Length: 632
Image 1 (tube, rainbow, N blue to C red):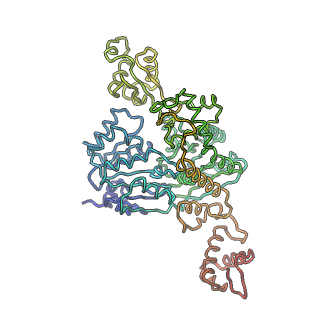
Image 2: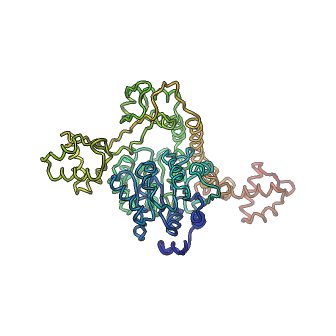
Image 3: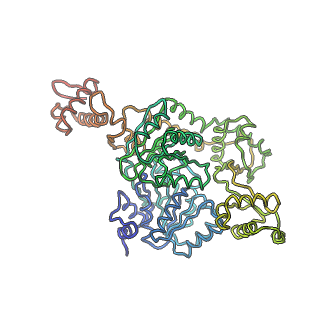
């Protein structure tokens, strides 16, 4: 039987595993449920790809990152390994072909998004697949106490019931101890499961906070001083365009990226940046997940993220090649106020949430007791204008109502284009006046989708363009024309969300918004906000050590190269060196009084440095000296 090391050498050319990779592989390979905590760039993919290749059957990889799916499928295929992905935007025919390949085609990897797990087609095909293991990437998304909770992840437990003897490997780069416990519980880890943690410390990454009154001026100064590829994160879409223009005006090549761009624009900009044609990517947090560019030298945050998890993951995209890199947060006193305001914006008063619920009923003219199963396109701007709400708070109220189970408020990116034929099939075939383009498009639509004469089907214009050889603009033009001629009804992808009623309308006074939905989540969110503010405002704690402590690493040491560690301490030495020595001195004196010479011997540090710290601690009355004997 081929060994794990032989597989690693054969397909990846490496002689040895890194860090905790081999321990994770041995655990999941022996059939145990396994949780691996590895920082960004720690080599997570090896931990499931190697054991999957060592055994018969298919490895199902659940991930929300379409860019990562495409990237890893391409890399595996280049190595001669059969892999396939299923994600939103594929036609029904494409999905069926992909899943059939997983049953009959001897495929080793199926990458799939969590939203597709409870579809009828996937579950029907899953029963016929020979599955060796399930990998859950970004597994922190399953925890309601995590920073990036996604309800679709909760469906994974149902898949486990269908595959009771298949082990699960959960992977994440950001999880607090509380979230770690939640992952294991929600994924129904079995007795004997194992957890492996790799230190989240990034020794090559220097964390820096710059206090400035002019962030744009500081940004230009940093990028002109430093060389190399960069990412600049900002809070909203408008700022990405403004900062890109600012950089271009200073002869710094830049492009911008956010969720509102179409897929073609995203791919072009990402490729330009990854290939080094563009130096700086200015982006919202929509950019970066699953993007593997190892030589990013600096990540700059113009606005503060609302959690250490988000900051750690985004900052961690710098220096994945192991070379020196920087993570810089630009901070002004206004940031603290803005960040604190997000708590009330994200968790408005319950009375306000009830008011939004009632206003929604009037907006849709919903009678008491009606609504269950109804679905409506929802224009939040129109709603807010009509009922005098602010969009941010209204959006938050609707998300809380979703968690409470009264409705589903879908994200705008989930609303794909739809169409349904309004003519009967026999009437459609009687029409002869179509030109070649129209005939070809109708033919491909009928082959690609089912049920088109009785209900709307979700379609993908890009896929139709590729299949027909027409441009995307021509496909759109034909579908609009056929709608005007009442041949079909085409609803292009909308930028507005949908609201789906999951319960009948009730009186607002009877709404139950429990502590699991509101108070506990608000408390957890406020804790993350406070941790982020503490990180930005501290003047005497190592930045790296603060982040490590947040993630449960209590025994971390001072990094020696963040802005705190490098600044001068009043004792005359570097702050990081002072903090290290102070801790060690107090630890030794806790065990008993020592003379200055005895203490110096045990510290193993230069005498001049030790004397400086001891003198400072005596002057500050942290320790005392009596007849040459030091004590606390």
